[in-house]
Length: 336
Image (tube, rainbow, N blue to C red; front, top):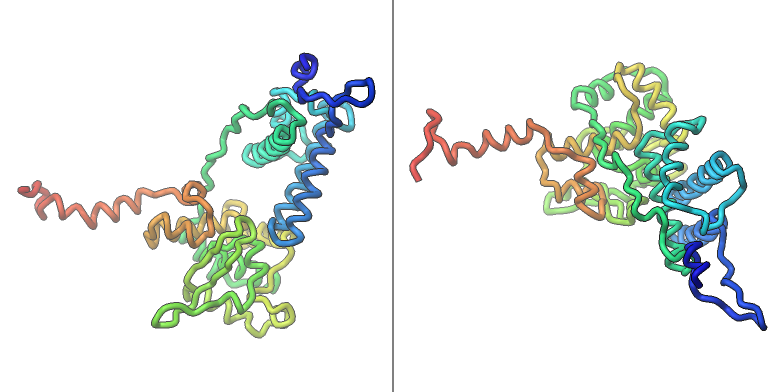
């Protein structure tokens, strides 16, 4: 038991005949395979997103790369993992790897490794998670949204290349709905619902792909125009979809071309579109944060706070609207 505690292995011993042996413990990659198999079963019945399943498979591939690079072997025993594992993994992903990741993406991989080791701890294969106390820095890195002038430039740009025209429409659609790529890919005419006395049109997705939380947003005029544009599109009619959306890889590739021809001095991606929607709702239209969170289908307002930062313009507008409660027209404080 002392030896097992030293090796961070379970203390329980199982007697087999006259021998005493430790319960069979998976290696790190076997643990990853075990987790993937369970996750795939749940994804097959709709309990998990297939996109998230693909991300876990990608994480497994990166773990294999890292183990081969750092430890010069094909796998690791769980008892061999120390706190420095997380530090080395971060350094490999951001510095040593041929296709380097940004800090936020590398931290996501470390969080996935933490989840695997928490699973091992829960099953009694580890006494404690050796990297549990590792803190991922830079998690709150702010992603500046597009300004309305930039969104307008993308929308009004005359584009003669059909594939880029369709990608532009899908991106602008995201900027004014906040729907993620996998959600706009799966949208059908049945997702349009009418609410209220005036029978206003809303886009309602009862299970957002990532969180399984309902996301709903009123159909703004620009969104209505895009939907109407593709109502008779052959692809949309065949697939019963609202938009002719490309595969994720092609979509992001075409968005890079779109940024160039529209003169946007930064990379466009689907995640940026969601941040832009949150910024428009919070700072331009001045919706409360709780409403923005509901529209985005977030489980927690803390997630929404990472998407939408309050800007000085919003504070200034609110101050100008209410300062008359305290001050007279000449700037003198009122008598109370």
